[in-house]
Image (cartoon, rainbow, N blue to C red):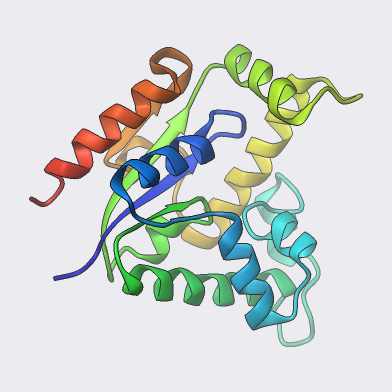
Length: 199
């Protein structure tokens, strides 16, 4: 039997990372987020900073610009190489046992090799703006602008490598609004869903 894995895609500032960690803790299974960055760094020689910046989001929110950005004579970019290594790391982690994987298009990478409960966490702009200021601090750039820019680049990356629409409900089993349900509400619903998933 294939391992049961929860993959969490999320809007920036929606609390998806926190939800993933709390679900994993309750289930007593690993949660992979920053840990993936460390494993990719070991395998690739890329810096953690490069992986953090390029492993989930495009340099631009424009799909066409990303298609031609920073490509060598063989047509392959550093981000393409990172995508392949990242995919191998995610596949290896899913084979080790049940786990939660946050971000990095994991539900797409694992589509044929694991039993994935595919989750998308979102929230309204006001809730997310309040959260990123509380968690990451105030910056010169308005929080709403930070959110829109990050989401746009995350969507462009997702669509470039998966050929699917980021945030589209049909790509996920569950979409939860953390602004309405709260972090703990989302955790409770995911724990119930995980218990029922392919039982």
